[in-house]
Image (cartoon, rainbow, N blue to C red; front, side):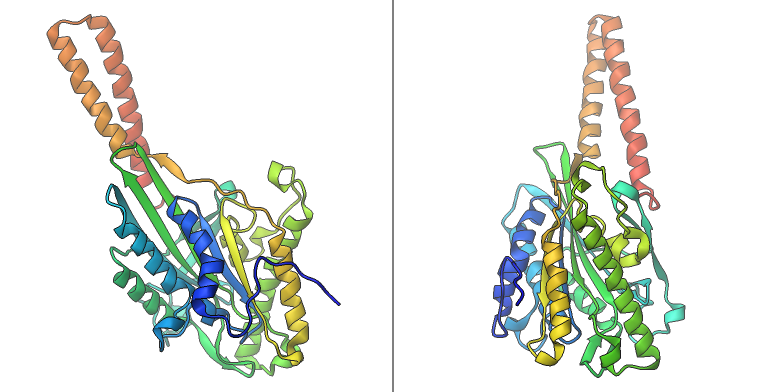
Length: 364
């Protein structure tokens, strides 16, 4: 017999709102406070990952984690009057180890893969992944955000397989970016929330696939294998937290590079593992159990993402310059005032240089 320890277990009759409250809401609460978050689903093809993440469009009560998260975020925004909050979303797909922007107008269902613009993912070291050619869309209200979600969902690569008649053949990452400014403080809080629907794992020998779908399955399994190797390396590396660590193979795949911060980094991460109750799938179920148990052992070190609000500081420095110039005119000690004025001017110039760098579209 085998024993596995998890934070929660749900049977086949569990409701979508129960899954959302247990899996997603704790991460969403912290995301709203300025912490990075990741929620991802892992499991065998046809076990319910995409249903958990996306839900059903037929019945409102069957909507999944993503639409429920969007409702929770905009519900929170309505209750806050003293802060300026903006929400941007991105939607990315990794298909056969190539990244695609699901919200790029060129990326439409049925488009030729070779013609589509590709998203580049680079290893940014301690800063996590650097992403190029991925469009970010301002969603000023929930309806816009939900529409963007549906638009990206329609562009996914989906194919029928013997294991699942509506099988997602790619990893998809829906990301929500919240930027919060307050008139009372000179800081900006930025937080990211990734919701990841991993492609289904399956044993090629029993999948009944051939040709193009067989190639897809092999690449999916390889990508998930690399993810598992990262998990194993982190689990075995007891010195990871103090940076005396062994090599963690994040660079082996686009997926692991993208999830670098989500696994063992600056992020609060929640995973839902989906399984089949059919004895025919026992080996795949045991594999999912072992993988999810390893993930549960990984410790992340999340911190609130605060940074100085350049606009507020620049405004205050300009006000200070006006005050010092007034002192000069009024006859206050010229040398002392000129020193102060020079110091403030240098601070203002440096802030303007930094702001120019951050406004550069190639700066991440």
